[in-house]
Image 1 (cartoon, rainbow, N blue to C red):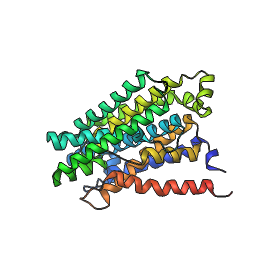
Image 2: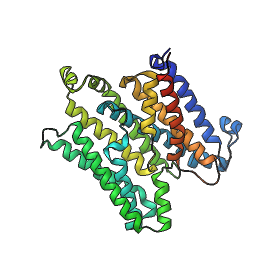
Image 3: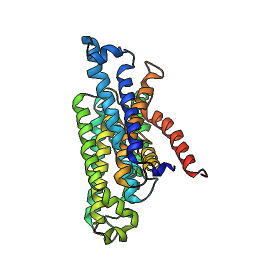
Length: 331
């Protein structure tokens, strides 16, 4: 049977069970291992409970939220642009967040508050996007071309700003910025994790509500309009929701690449291209990729932690290539 013909439940349940297994493994494994029996029996000591509740659990939940958010954003943007190469970085929000973090670190000197600069940079990018899309001053305003050009402009401006700032940075600042830009789920407090989970759940619910309209876009813009879809409003809604989700995760966790590109591809190859099926499947796969990547990043060479973004790419590339090979191989 072709992978694309698989019922979603048949594929989703194994992925969900695998995600639960890696979540439990991530809670146990680390520099301070937690006994499985004591964890399941609720008999942890005060020190073990502190490790679980203040270090491991927030980190694992942040990885779930981050992976699901990037995957949902990537799947929605790929459906909206009708381009399988679209990813959350297309709108320029992660690049703008990186520039904001660099300004906070190098110019302001607020190394402990990188997230404030990142959130400010992402917010400015979203404001620019809203301004130009809603302005309606040109025939293509609000269209795909406008969003693409705006994303290219934001990415180019952010890259130029980062190049200038890194030339002025000290060696320590460069190391801090480089590690942040490659992503990490460490040292996150519960309020931050709850905010990340809330933004992911809310954004995912909104995107799921738009799945019929996104499916209609597969017919082309004229076809979608003929079945009653307001294409301009759909673009604006999806762009704003995906940008907000990506901004909320990037501000606190840094840039985690490839998940928003690979997870939607894997989801479509397993359950088909329908957004109603691909969006939740992509969220599960994205969460699994990030939980597994975080586990590897902190376990492969302790006490050194590797960048999560590098691990997600290392995990996602062979899996994606394998699925594409199975899809294109003669039956």
